[in-house]
Length: 394
Ligand SMILES: *[C@@H]1O[C@H](CO)[C@@H](O)[C@H](O)[C@H]1NC(C)=O
Ligand SMILES: *[C@@H]1O[C@H](CO)[C@@H](O)[C@H](O)[C@H]1NC(C)=O
Ligand SMILES: *[C@@H]1O[C@H](CO)[C@@H](O)[C@H](O)[C@H]1NC(C)=O
Image (cartoon, rainbow, N blue to C red; front, side):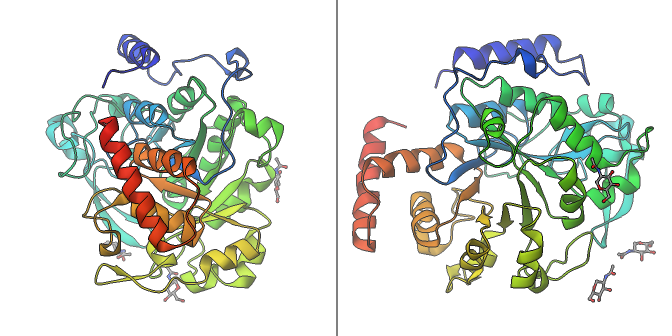
């Protein structure tokens, strides 16, 4: 595969000015011209590139996001945390251990700590104990050993502002989907000089780059964004700071909310959905709570999607992954069969995927042939898609 020229230019530019930490690579929004860009598609479920194209390239790196854009992402998704000195960064875990080379950096060996995170003690190297400059000196690696390891050690952690610049500089309109990650923990460990909270810093960053407007408004279509969080109080707190659409993430049935300590049953009740819909346009549930699984086979779907839709809430489940380690046996090791099930049977409105390219190809190919009405035509459709794929040498 050859990289498109804009990706090559970006990589070169990143190498040249990568040392200028804390500064965005690209100019502020007035300089961007979105007028002539291909708009965001709004006629089919959203392809949400979970931590970039992290099935292929280490998660939350510039390269993973650029790959996702190249592969057809509608939105690039990221987790926002903070450095010790209050810079917002794109990083999933509160600790650096699983996805960076921190263990090889002996100068940081004394930074290991144990902190309480979401009601449990956790030990490791926490982002909140490192300055942005120190974090930038680390290199990111692939989380799963069965994925491509060749990019380990090649890319650094990026800031929220650098992430935004990647989206704004894409050759078509690409939305962003940032998460206010572990706000209780971040607000406890990071104090900003101006007395502002993590949520304020998060929203102000979006405002600085011109992100505004309610779902599908004219402003929003120019620079689409969804704000997501597992913490309902963060979503209600920012409600009067921005009318950008918000998504309430819902964890496994056994996990209580990290801020309000509410159970899964409470937050998926009709009365709670009635309350939260004043603040959010949708929910983002773990997919195995929508369709429970036993022995790696799907059970009967719950009524969560119907319930959410009856409250005018979209449903964007997470996380779709191509590998057989994650695919339930019902899908016969075929990620297209999984997408077909979730899009056409469960009728979700967006999908968080580790493999944006696969979801995009599935959606492109299945929209050329009419959506099948029953299972037998579904499998013949899948056969057709398989033939097309092999003739395309993907
Ligand atoms: C975490 O460890 C501290 C110190 O040992 C202890 O006081 C606290 O109860 C622990 N918290 C949890 C949630 O286990
Ligand atoms: C949002 O509401 C809170 C109180 O509910 C208020 O203190 C704050 O000033 C409001 N912020 C904005 C931007 O209106
Ligand atoms: C959360 O709520 C559960 C159920 O009421 C309770 O057992 C638990 O102690 C609470 N946890 C915290 C940290 O308050």
